[in-house]
Length: 273
Image 1 (spheres, rainbow, N blue to C red):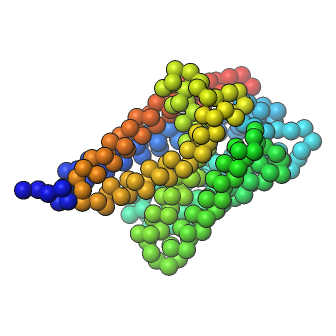
Image 2 (tube, helix red, strand yellow):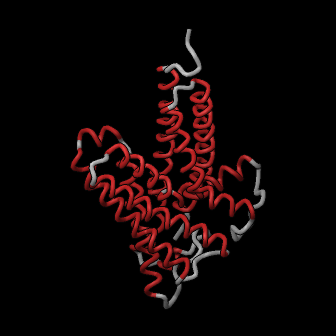
Image 3 (cartoon, helix red, strand yellow):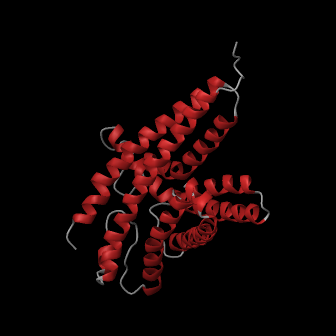
């Protein structure tokens, strides 16, 4: 007779499948996000339409006379394409196995870009004043600090050849470095599931906005830690609970990602310059 703590390969496979499904949904959505960044900001940068950066999805884009701030903003946004694409490629197991050299160099590039973007985000927040409220500024800052800390831990364990630990920290880094994408997906999922804004406002300073800002990186981070516990546990009931959590998060991600693509990113790509 099977006990509550006996290993169950079927549930282990189901949990891994649920995690893989979430990953595939996230990769597809992040790919659309990358296309949006390239199509919207890249097109306006190449054509010299810098004032066109000032869409509703950014707080402070182009500011006349602020050459340094404008340059930092352009680099921050456009390098996000390389960081996002590189982060996705780092998580593909087949690439890690078949092309280890690419995995190492792509990982170094991802780490460097993540840290640079975190630091530039902190600069933009507190030097350029690119925040809507002190709370939102502190939330962005915490995200940036976590990126730097997790990047340092990822490097430290890779150098020490503690590969299993390195991979855990790399995944944590991916979660917090994807905070901008998670926030947009979370906002759209919240609005769609509530059939409209609830605790949101135009300046993104409502209680729901602030909660979603913090959740955009803390919730995925917590979910990953719970997923790790579920993979390692011998408890069938706990594994079922974790599988249900991942399935729910996958559904919410699908709703939010679909909403972001339909109502935010794709309309911006088709709008006239």
